[in-house]
Length: 325
Image (cartoon, rainbow, N blue to C red; front, side, top):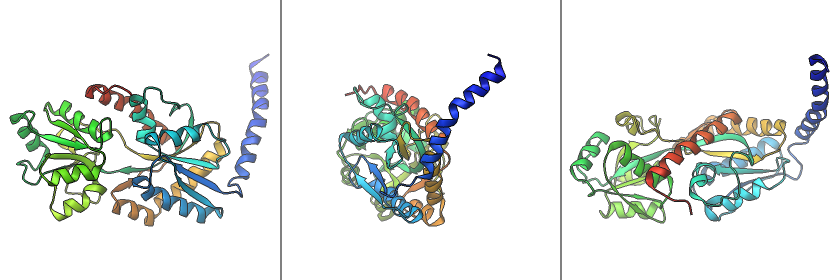
């Protein structure tokens, strides 16, 4: 068979698949409505997820349910969506935890973040930070590094638990700055902040949304933003990367996915609708007010962030000496 004839034959074979995808897109959104599923109890993911669900319902004219299905650090709901229907009715709100760090921290992960999902859109970046006890004689990253080197093992940092991003961030700082600060795990960010205020630890890696009220009251002081760039709402606060270029934080995005095999036209439609919602002035303002920055963009952007994060978090987990459980 000559090349032109072979090409024509291949295109002929693909035509029914293209028509099937177009037909699926034309029937979306389904009259039965949509479901956005998140694998965590009400909390940070809801700050963005619930407003997006409400706006999506208004835009599409069908019922959109936002459902919290907590369990196993998000793994149960994530696996359910991965094994679910491919009609675009169920959308997963995933995180860098469910799709990046879990690869390295869960011994028998029952889903493949790359192979089992179609990325839809990277939604937001939670702004993270390093806060300190006000009496600590260090107000900047260089001063903190100098103090830690002069007092090895005497500084301790709190996080939301072993293997959490905030634990990894602290160990990453130790590695890149050449210092030795001691990790103290907590069950949640509020408990870590409480112990910081009480003087039991000197540092906490946390989200800006959690630390914000305590920064404003003067109970803790803000040392740096962990993202590679400054946050628009705190333009005078440097990124840790400015003083420690080796500290390049992987993105800790929240993003939307559907099951692998969902037709491309449906993925493109969901992406378009959510991107418009995220980039509306009202939503951008709400997100920034709550300590998040909007990402948006095509599905490929989320895929690239995820693949990059899996690789870089792997290095951080290895450096921290954490074994999967």
